[in-house]
Image (cartoon, rainbow, N blue to C red; front, side, top):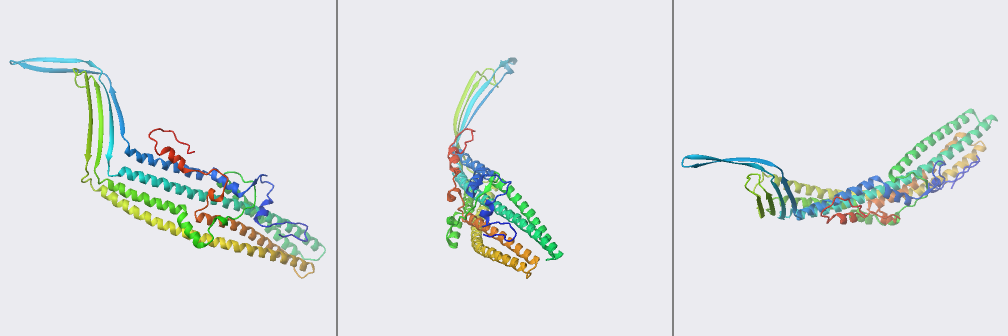
Length: 473
């Protein structure tokens, strides 16, 4: 806590929390908590909702793969009107006789064909496994998107909270500098100081107003970012607390948790499974294919003869196709799939290394943020004492007006540093939680219905027909 002295203006700031609590007059009256902002982002963020839709689209790959187990049925029909004329020649005893058959008829045909694949080198089974792995990879990608949005929301909230407090500090600083200028002018009028002192006070006031303009610009930008990420206009922001309690207590534990639970690692693992199934699918092109086709056709009249009144045909045919050589494309596809598999395994190693690096970096930033708060608190306390001392010394002529202005600016800078340190402390705790893969509504205990990707999957997995889109609920 600090107090501006000798100038008749009091202002108390205890960091981000109280600074943000002294909200600007233009801000809405309703209070917003960080947890509430995270709930809004989880429900309203369009990027997150887009990823949920993408996950639902990937779900459809499983019934598409399962379709390979099911028969294919086609019904055909034709009909119309035709005229026909046929002339034949018959030779009897050297004498030719010509006979002509002419007329109109309306031939029609109906039929159906059912085709069932019995064996295709296990391609259907492998495509189904690949589709299921794609679904799991998509869910892990959705978890990554959730973590990113929640971290962005927490950062946007804390940025606005910080910039609100800094703007309030800078405005209070201008008030102090205005009073300082008034007192300096009064002292100049009675001959206690020179014109130089007045000019120095005027310069400091101009610099203070410039800082207010910069703080207002930062505040406006943070408001826009808040609206973009969270989806609603910000209100009066309440204090926020770190979430260290949800993170591992040791760096080694954090690294172990991150490399095992971070959704980017999980996505890379499923991508390896997808690539492995792609190899098996490509190899399936070298195996025989067995299909059974059943068909029937009913003809009424005939398109080729006026004398045919009715015809019916039905058949069940089994087909065995053994590939011998198809130009070499299938072998190239297998080699290509194997190279892709090797790439995905390397991508998995890269993902684990990246997560490990992010965890260590976030851990270091959190430690630094914790230490920085203590340092900036001591800085503010020392700056307050120094300012009071300089002012008292200036009263008896041992310090100049410039010394007072410099001490005032040092105190403002220290308070801004403390606000920033408290902001960094909270953001760093959320960053570490995201790095270890635990930044989720369930872990944070947010009061919001969580999106369950398995519901839509169960709705569409065994669907044989229909174009209605399930709602996923």
